[in-house]
Image (cartoon, one colour):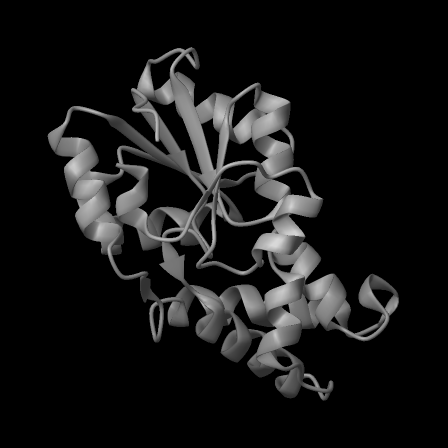
Length: 212
C-alpha cells in the first residue's frame, strides 16, 4: 500500500460500525408513525446516500407517503439522541488512525450523514485523531459530488496531489472518481467485494492495519 500525505475517510461502514443504531432509529421512526419496520439487512442496503435517501427507501412509497415528513423528522430527532447507543469503531480503527497521526498524516472524514451527527460522532470517538469532519449541509452537495471532499481538503489547507479516499460503498468509489483521488475500498463495511468490484473498485483492504 502506497503511503499518502492526506487520508480522507468515509464514516459509516468505514470507521464506525453504525448499522445497529441506524436500524434501531429507522424502526423507531417507522413504528412511531404506524409504518412497517425494516430488517437490518434492508437498512444496510439503504444507507450510503444520506439520511433523506435512507428514509425514502425505508418508508413505503417514499416521499409520496403522507407520513414521510413526520417519519423523517422523527428519525433525525431520535438519531441525534441515540447515535452512540451501539455504534463503535471497527476493530483496529483507533490504532490505525493513531499511527497515521503519529506519522504526521492529515486525516479528515466526509459523510452523507447530516452535519451535526457527523461532527458529534467524530468528536466522541476520535477526538483529535480526525482533524476535519464534514457532513451533509445545505451548502454542500452530498457524495458522490466532490464538494464535501474538496471542503475537507480546503479546511485542512492541503492539495489533493498526494491524498487518498477510503470508503466501503459504491458511493465512495464514485466520490473518489469525481474528486480525481485514488480509492481504497474496505471489506468490513456495508458492501461485499463482488459488489464493490462491479462498481469499479480496484484496491481492497480487509484490515485497517493494511492501510499503513
